[in-house]
Length: 513
Image (cartoon, rainbow, N blue to C red; front, side, top):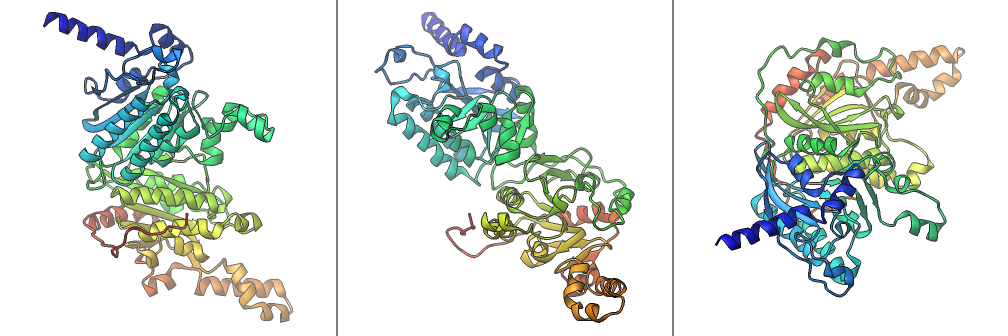
């Protein structure tokens, strides 16, 4: 028995070293942690249980294949974050560049199968050079096996991908199917084809950072939801993100203890500028409405005319969707519609109630938007809100014009409670534009056109561009003082916490992708 134990300990030590001390040192020199160091940071101390430590690759056709490293380039297992079960795989760049082989893929698939059966999140720490070329089609098949499981698990368990190094070619599609992607500045890259191929095919001279770095995907493509300065911050971000979501679609997110106090927020009474066209930062309203320091913004650098993120109200996890008047006046466009729709659908998948804060002058006009599909893309946000069955509350804080009024979680598409502030303007369009159309003849025939225009604009505003017409119809449940907003939301979320809605029987809907 002693001999067998010593052999086991030797093999375990070999697996722990991955590609060897030299390659570990190389990883550290690049400012990167090793696969096991990342897991140690992510999980509660002493909670990690490894699966497949002694797995070896099967390909033996090339000289490089004669090198045998236990675990085969990926560390897989389960543990806890804040006492809650999670499954994690961490690719080891010190072993064949973290490339995906047949057995590497099998380990990840086995982990995902366990996560799906046991109803717990999967967290992927990606650091791989792509498919292992020496294994040919079996490595490609391994990717497809992972993609299939990502798809089957979607909406059943949360899936989070951290990109902590290269992620290229087919490897990018697994993170793309998951719920959230995180990247580290200067050390992580995602692209379907690298800079060399791009230069050969399109003659564009571009660096890895410019093509697929964290900033590019956070601001231009919207592929990544979060970026961090280093890996430690990224891993802390994963832990924070997990705290807002349940373990699976049959549970609710964990609630924090909350002691009720004075819920009046006087600052909200003066937060909206007197000039209806003057911008302000919607985050200031969010900060006053939700629990202190609880807002965790998602997709912060992308489509900034809409703000989405997780927060807590009275200790309970919610999702926030809000127009941002400080950027493009808060209009809806292609990118903001996609951003909002994706977030709404995640919250609905995992029983996270939604709060919508509305200040929207409409959809962005122009040929660029029309030719790139603002109709079908805007419909994504409309579809997402309409489909969602979680508790849905809306507060109209200033403008709600045109079709954008309907899209931003209006009563007509299933909102449970809609509140409006007294200065809210709910109309087909702005008062000036509407008056110029409706009273075109009167203005043209008037001796003092400017005075007449002001007169009809004021009349239109008084009769139509206010919340009381909508409230009279029941489209707004209550017109409230801004300072009372938080208290009203706490009660409304409490009232709707047992909401149950059954959609018509169907295989699945056909969202306008």
